[in-house]
Image (cartoon, rainbow, N blue to C red; front, side):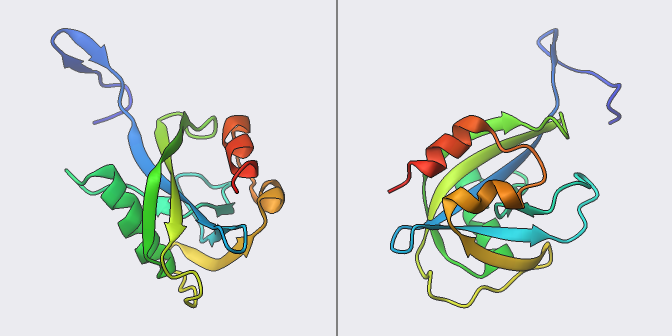
Length: 148
């Protein structure tokens, strides 16, 4: 389907979004957040560092998808603590990103960058903005800065 085509359900136009799930992986003992340096991403060329995540598979529960994506991209097992934010990207208007707060079940494990990341690192919440080259929503930033 092209962007110009419309989807109608019961006679109403419905927008089309690509849903991505992202994990804000938090280590409460060290008070750090996990981020990854993206390998070239054709969908968002300006993207460099970001939270781990990706697209759910067909008919996959979103919470299971975020856990699977984090495991594939970092090697970490996580527990999802729930949705903390959702937004459309100004850089990519047809993406709907759903952010989950996740806690690593094995934070001491060596990080293993998957195919999409060239590097992974734990950073202090205050440092996030200096790494991110795409929009960082103020509400998400506020939430992360208040993690205990």
